Image (cartoon, rainbow, N blue to C red):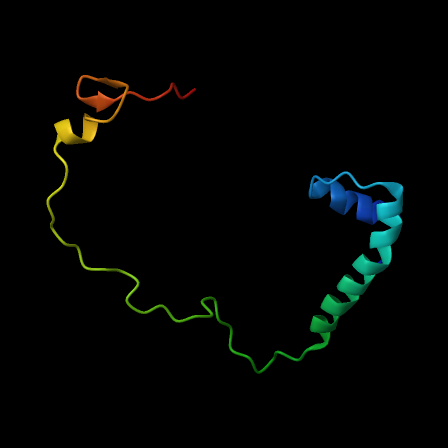
Length: 94
């Protein structure tokens, strides 16, 4: 991959960072080094590796439903400043 100041500037724009000319020159070799390090991953033989879409096995990720006492409507509305007809009044959504 060709790393030039245009590429560094484009990456900076995507990251919403305004880079100065000295910063572009400073980051050019650093960015090239990072891309070279990641390109070494393309050389790794992964033909014998089983695909895994969930790298960490999930166990007991759902809890049992427990019936507990909840707030009444009056208690829920007690601390709200803006309520109307038994509901909390929120801002308009357009």
